[in-house]
Length: 79
Image 1 (cartoon, one colour):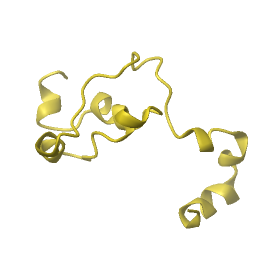
Image 2 (tube, one colour):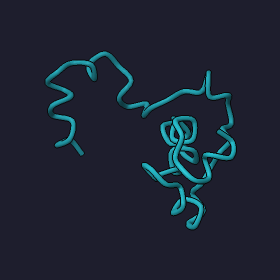
Image 3 (cartoon, one colour):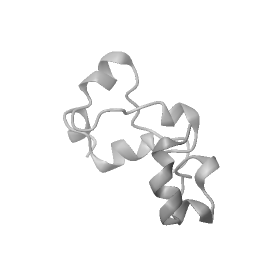
Image 4 (tube, helix red, strand yellow):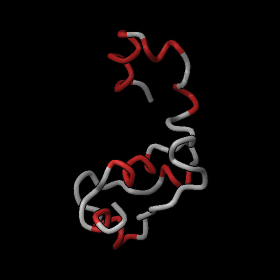
């Protein structure tokens, strides 16, 4: 994975983007190839906490209401 992530986006590399810590969230935007993240300086391979224990997702949508069907259907229209 350490070498492959420079050529294709691996699950571990993309997981950094889903961190709840803003500097990590603002990284690794690529879906398939990380070249643009490398070019624009948004490529990040390390996280401040181990990936196994790091907090994921946005804080404002970490409650039970976000698991309801109607909330999920309406969420793209919310600001």
